[in-house]
Amino acid sequence: MRYVSTRSAAPGKSFSDILLEGLSSDGGLYVPETYPSVDAETLERWRTLLAEDGYAALAFEVLRLFIDDIADADLRGIVQRAYEPGKFIDPAVVPVTRLSDGLWLAHLSNGPSAAFKDMAMQLLGELFAFELQRRDQTITILGATSGDTGSAAEYALGGKPGVKVFMLSPLGRMTPFQQAQMFSIEDPAIINIAVDGVFDDCQDIVKELNADAEFKARHRLGAVNSINWARLMAQVVYYFAAWLQVSDGGPVSFAVPSGNFGNIAAGHVAREMGLPIDRLILATNENNVLEEFFRTGRYRVRGSAETLATSSPSMDISKASNFERFVFDLHGRAPQRVAELFGKRLPDEGEFDLGATAEFDGLADRFGFVAGTSTHADRLAEIRHVFEADGIVIDPHTADAVHVARRSGVDGPIVVLETALPVKFSETIVEAIGVVPPVPDRFRGIEDLPRHVVEVAGNAEAVRKVIESH
Ligand SMILES: *Cc1c(COP(=O)(O)O)cnc(C)c1O
Image (tube, rainbow, N blue to C red; front, top):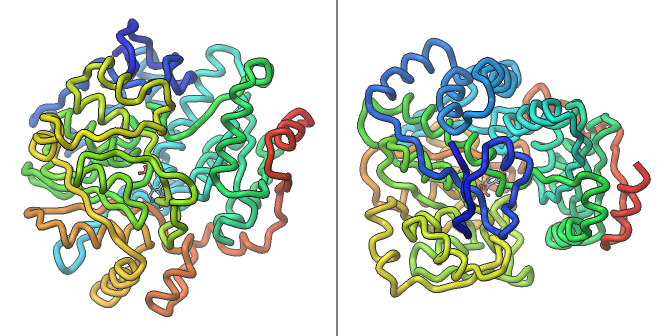
């Protein structure tokens, strides 16, 4: 399997090369040259495999379709370590639950950081460790987080030989639980940096330091952001796992709380591979960049002043880093069209209107997308409703998808992807149902542990000094 850029017809690269490279040098994103296809017979075989041997065994089968430069025995080890049942609250890794009104929940947030980002980050951590060792290299991960990515990356990369992590977060802006998760980690190779500013300032600092070629090379800077193909690939697996548990062979729709378009892009890939997915129901919060696109054809990136701080904060985005991958497929995988649309900008900076094009016209039928938005009041109402009807507490992001799924008019089974445990967003849960969400055993008391964090001014120089001094 070779990987190509969404923006140029340059020859394909191997999986291991694009794993460490992240973004292509032409500014595009890497995608597989073709999507592997999976037939009904294979799905039936996988049904038995998942039931008898568990999630890691299924993950191996799916991932080896995308990776041909890691030996089977090595890849099996990587996948088994990433999805070892003991790391997840439920040994099924991605269990499903049926609500009394017929909606299904697929629980993606049972991992070490209690958000769905663990599903990809756990695999990425193992893949990085394997590849760095094979090449006898080290890497310094420089990242920015508004909440969930940081802790998922730190739990995945901590203790991995050759990996050092500097994680920027906006000072005082994560929830107390999210801060505790990151700052309580005791590992000399993990350095938390709280930046006096907002999330966009953190991201700008990461970009500025990466633009300094000498600094970047000297420290071997790398990234684990959501544009890395390996993260998307890891997420494809749970669409298969959920489908196998819910369907007896017929189509299933998925409702996905969306921000950067990473989670639902994996659903798109699974659908292109032949998994019987009827609709991909995209849910946004008040920051509806993506809903606007699927409704009108207009993709309009917004500034930070136009990005609202909501009660589903992990979806507070003004641009969607993974969206370019879908635009590539929408245009028949023609890189020159994508390059025209995005120009020389980064994948998350394009702005265009496809409303009057033939591609947009046939989009819903060809690719199955439908979209909707949810507000603070909607989210509170859904948290309350699910709690009263089923005694289950869902987090605010999941509630957005439940809301949009219920109003989508889509027939047949719908699986809502649960993306976080409610404990991460306690305040909103208390506002909705007056009940403090349960704290899983593994997180009990973390808010009282010593905090490991360096506070710096909101500029690249301050961060550069911290990196130089380690
Ligand atoms: C990151 C995140 C999302 C958004 O996922 P994307 O892949 O960016 O679309 C939704 N919910 C939670 C809890 C998250 O952490």
